[in-house]
Image 1 (cartoon, rainbow, N blue to C red):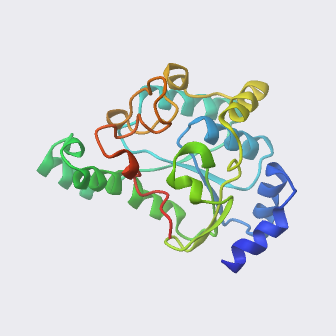
Image 2: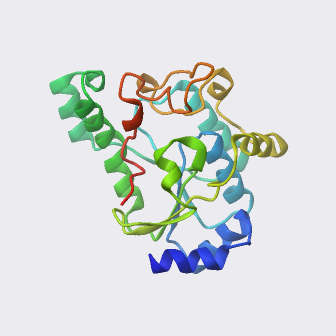
Length: 233
């Protein structure tokens, strides 16, 4: 917790780009950014790649992504010419789950869905984060109720590292405007009512008046819809 407070004081007032550069200098080779190619993540990717910051960018290739997600992934590689590391699920665990329960077991119960998320996302994330000190994410405070308890700089005890959420205080309109001004590639599903985009079988468009994350795991309790990537310690 003390380290998180010290970092917060050090970057306060610097602005996001300078804060990212500061972290890269203070923790050389130990700063990592996770992208799922959504609006927010594309903003941060642009900041990192445009300045050629020594921050490793990675994504979780669950094997169930939308075609449109692969499209924006490739467009991002073409635009910036820099590497995005892909982390896949453990083959043995995935084969065992699908062989015993089928390819759509996540619809049958919360336990099955969490098992699928655990194999396809949580375990690969643990491998991606291992050995690093700073985890950068695209989380914004207004995205869901439980995430409003987070802060821009956090001590992530479960992963034994510091988590930095540089867009924490941004509104969605600010994100969209930044993308427009900088001509940043973004997922075309956003224009079709998808504010949050994950695995294709678990994500649908959000209807007018629905909550931001209503399109994720829509068959479950509205207040319990997290995959385990961002949990409070």
